[in-house]
Length: 82
Image 1 (cartoon, rainbow, N blue to C red):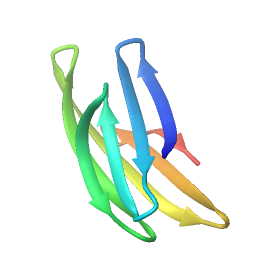
Image 2 (spheres, rainbow, N blue to C red):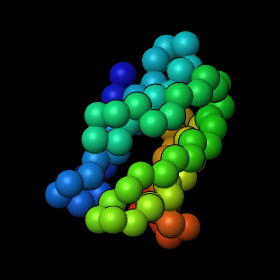
Image 3 (cartoon, rainbow, N blue to C red):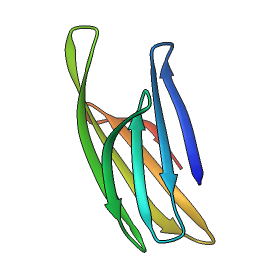
Image 4 (cartoon, rainbow, N blue to C red):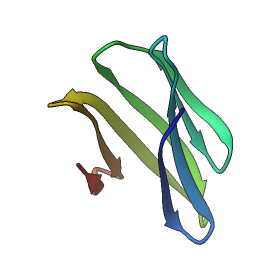
């Protein structure tokens, strides 16, 4: 099930999927960059080249009050907190 699609810029998109068994899948422009299984959430990290530079991403998935929370950081700067 798709939980989130975030367009970072016109050339980059992050998708976050999760299935009923707790398998979290992170895609960057359709390419799987991280997969983990979790009940209460986890932290996914990956690097991608953007405009000739390496961008470091960290995605924190957590169980919040009656919902799933996503915090996304690019080069240690928050781009989505919820």
